[in-house]
Amino acid sequence: RGRTETSVRIRKDKKTDSLAKRRNMTLAIADNPTITGSGDSMSDASGVKHVKRVYTVENIPYLMTTLRNSNGSMDLALEAVQGFRRMLSIADNPPVQPILDCGALPIFVQLLQCNDDKIKFEAAWALTNV
Image (cartoon, rainbow, N blue to C red; front, side):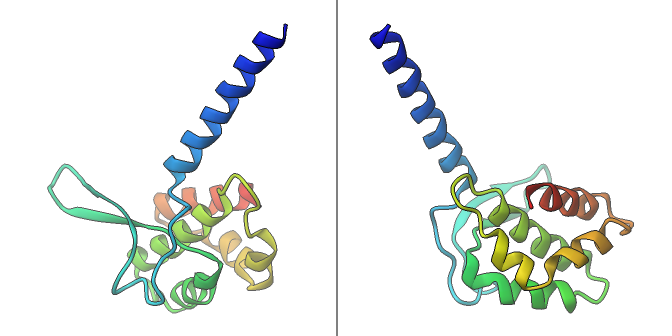
């Protein structure tokens, strides 16, 4: 019985570690994420390289400014919503209260009316993580 419990605990620990690695939330981003960022880079089918940025609580003002001032730029809005969603997807202690305090929740709800399906998806995902 003790051996089984130990095996289960070890599997759970490995799963938690792999989730944390996959979410890439252990790295911090520089002060200005548009110039320098940390994270994994991926290439899509067209060969364009995309950098998956990692945001922290310190980046909330930047993300809010980007959301408010996207002026129809779907790429900027998508980047900001993804940043919030990634922060809210942290397994241990996601920064829910700071994100609520900055006023992002009404913007997420408003983005559900957007024409871009990717933005709708990310906004809905962020809302479910709240």
